[in-house]
Every structure is written in structure tokens, then in C-alpha cells.
Length: 144
Image (cartoon, rainbow, N blue to C red; front, side):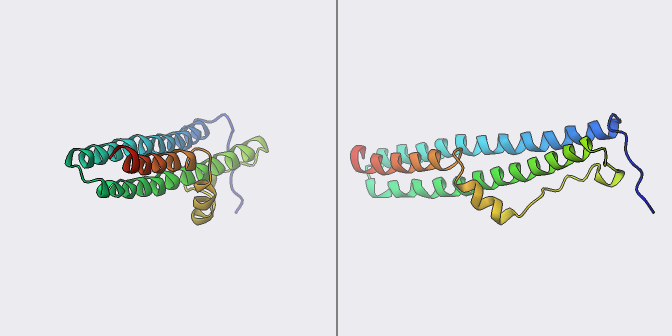
């Protein structure tokens, strides 16, 4: 049985695109939140360490730095995978080969492990966390 072709101007196509765009936007916001929370947690740890006068405990601030790096990279990898899904759908849309089985399937495309390692070297990830790591080490050596 052949799948019925879907009208590219249909409400279902528009809804599918909106849903996928929402997921992509949510992943981008989660990535941004990771950076904000990382700075907050690392700063709080360094303030407590400085207040107690125990500079050797400044290394504890590296733990949230690494955890948020991994989480941020995960969200970026998912965002990229959803962008692939979105772009594939748009390509099918332009080729007029969309069928009903393509609609409302919002499963990221690609290999998460591969995309994770591609994302960790992204300019939006490593400079931020590397700079924060350097700041932690400088704070430990110079200020504390």
C-alpha cells in the first residue's frame, strides 16, 4: 500500500515544523542555562572556599565545571540531531515527497555518541568551560 502524499501547505505540516522548532529552541535554552548555572555554582563554591580560607578546596569547583560541560555538550548534540531531522523534513518538503508517516515523528536523527564528540569541540562549548577552568585554577593560586 502506497503512502498518501501530504499537502505541503497543510496544518499538519506546519504543526510538525513548529513542534520540531520548539524542541530545537528548548535544547538551545537548556544549553544556555547550563552555562548560567555553571557560573553560579562555581562562583558560590569559590566564595565559600575563600570565606573559610581553605584554598585547597577550590578544586571542588572543577566538579560542577565538568558536569555542566558534559550536560551542555549533550544538549548541543541533541540540538544538532534535531536540526538534522528538521533539515531532512524540509528537504522532503521541497522535493514534494512528504507523506503522513513523516509527520509528528520527533526523534533525533543521527548517532548520539558521535554527535556528542563532535559537539564537545564546538566553539560554543570548549572555550567557555576551558576559560572557567583556568579561572578556577587562577583563583586557587592567586586569590585564595
